[in-house]
Length: 420
Ligand SMILES: *Cc1c(COP(=O)(O)O)cnc(C)c1O
Image (cartoon, rainbow, N blue to C red):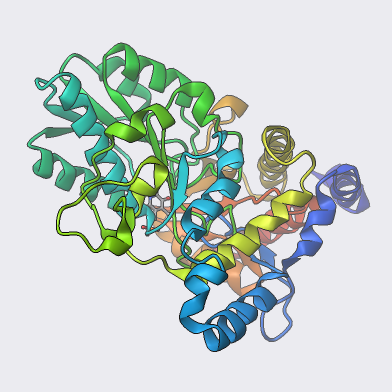
C-alpha cells in the first residue's frame, strides 16, 4: 500500500473536489466543528441533514414577527394555511412529480398509514377480492408495524417479501405493496419503475417509501406511474429534526383517495366546521390537522438551497446522483486501501444501479461495530451504527466533499488497526 501513502491520494481527493460542480453548495450549510471546535466529518446526513445557513434567521422571523406580532393573522397573511401544499411544490420536482401531487404534513410514519390504507381501498374498489398486502421484508420498523395495522384496518392479510421478489410475488390477490426505494440498513436501491410496472400488471397498487432517496438521487415518480409515495424531509432534504414528511398521491387517483385519517384540514370547507366529512379536491385531501408551522417553514427555507443546484429539477438530480456515486465509489476504494483485510465487508451493492447514497460496512466481529462507531465519532467522523454489526455512512451530495471521504476512510483504518 506504500504508493497509496503520502500526498498522492490526498491529491486525488483535492482533484475530485476541484472538479466537483456542486462544491460551492457546501458553503450553504453549517458544517463547522462541534461545540468545542473539533473538526467534524459529517456522514450522518441520512439520519439528520445538516443545517442550511439561512434557516436560523428565517425561523427567528417566523417566531418573532409572524407569530409574535402578527399572531393569528399569519394563518392568512403570512401564508401559513397553504404552506403544506406550497412546500409540497418545492419537494415535487425533486422526486419527479408535476405540480399538485405532493403535500407536506405529519410524519413519514403517519403518511405510510394514509398511503397504504388509501391504496388498499382503491384496489378493493376495483376488485373486492384483493385480500393481500405485500411489504418489503427488511423494511424500517415503523413501516412494518404500520403495514400490520393497515392490514387489520382493511381486513387484508400481510405478507413480508424481500423487496427484490415483490415483482414476482404480486398476484391477483394483491391489493398493494409497500416498498422502500433504498433500504435504510444496507443502502440497496430497488428498481422503482420495474417493481411498480410489475405491481400494475398484477392489478395492484404501489406505495413507495422514499426516505433514503428523496434529495439523494432521481426518483421519477410520475415517469414510473407510482401510485403513492411518502418520505422524510429531515434526511437528504435537510429540513431539521422532525420536519414534516411528504405524501404523493398520483393526480388521477386523488378523486378516489379515501384517507384513513380524514381531518378538518382536508375537508372541502374546513371553516364551515360541518358535521359530515366532505373531502377536499386535490392533494389537500392528504392533510389531517393543523400543520406544524415552525418545522414546516424551516423546511421551506432549507429547500431553497435547491434553487442553487443547476437547472433545478430533473437535471439537477442527475448531477446530484453523479456526485453521490462518485463519493460512494471513492469511499469504497479508500476503505479497501486503509482498512486491514477481513475486518469489514460492504453490504451495499457495488453495482451503481443498485446503490443508494450510503455505504454500510458489516464488521466481521459484529460486537465491534458499536464501539468502533463510538470511537470514530470521538475522532470527529460521524456515521451511525445499525444492528446487527453495521457501520453506516451517508453521503449527502450537496455538502459532502471528497476530502471528507478520504478522512473518514483513513480514521476508520486507524481505529480498526488500533483494536486487537
Ligand atoms: C427515517 C425513516 C422513517 C422515519 O419515520 P418517522 O415517522 O419520521 O419517524 C420511516 N421509514 C423509513 C424507511 C425511514 O428511513
